[in-house]
Each structure stands twice: as structure tokens, then as C-alpha cells.
Length: 129
Image 1 (cartoon, rainbow, N blue to C red):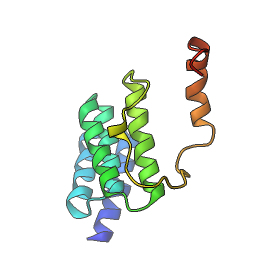
Image 2: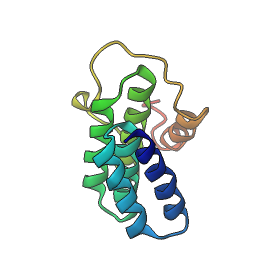
Image 3: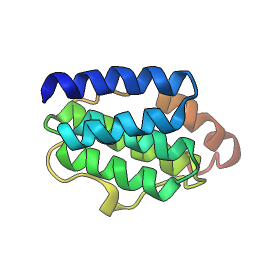
Image 4: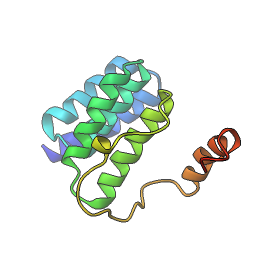
């Protein structure tokens, strides 16, 4: 099952890049069926985001965070949830959106990403920053 899930991941990613969304989404569903986990749920989240299903994208990424097995994976999924919120016009998330437990190293976030998001806020709300 592991090899089939990896194959579905590669095929799904390729089909997505080619714009063949229905076939890509079917490959991602096969991943979920064979090996549900962070990689599968993150791809489903992205697929739902591409089709304008924001709530579905959030639900899938929350599932990814729920199955995350390492602090880095939790950081990745939490970052993606923050990006989904930001892209939806929300500038912050509440405490219920924050995973419990001690924070781990957030190596999954691209360097400088937070700085890029803070600069527009600083320009409009200088007294807050």
C-alpha cells in the first residue's frame, strides 16, 4: 500500500501541474484511501483551495495537523492553516486554532515569510506593531 500511495502522490502532483484537476483529485483521494496522513490531507487541502472550497481546504488541513507526528509537521500544518486564514481575509486566528503542547522548531516555514506578512500590517497599524 505504501508504494501505491507514493505512486498516487507523484501522479497526482504531475496531473495537478498539468491542469488535469479531476484526475489529480482522484489520485489524491487514492492516497487518502491507501495511506491517510499529512501528505495526503495537505494535498486534498490544496486541491480544495484551488477549486474555491475554502472551508473544505481548512477541514483537510486541520485533519493534516491532527495526524502530524512531529513538531515540524505540526508547524507545517499550522502555518498552512494560517495562510488559509490570511488568504481568506482573516488577520489572526484564535487560541482554539493553536495546537496544544510545547512548541517545536518551526523549520517548515519559508525563511522571511513572517516578515513579508507583517510589513503590510505595520504600514497600516503602526501603533499595534
